Image (tube, rainbow, N blue to C red; front, side, top):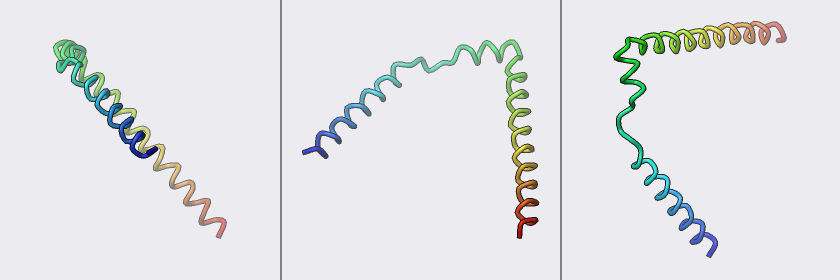
Length: 73
């Protein structure tokens, strides 16, 4: 009985979530405004800079950890 109630509850939640998604507007206005002003490239550049910085940081930390692990053996 609990499984049936649980599955029905999950089904109702799923249907409600999907109906909320269909109610959203399909056209993102902010992206269009930023694209028309040319500022979307600034946003993309900042995001790429942050991602590259994170990858470099992870690479450096991985090298330091590897060096510490080799020293302990």
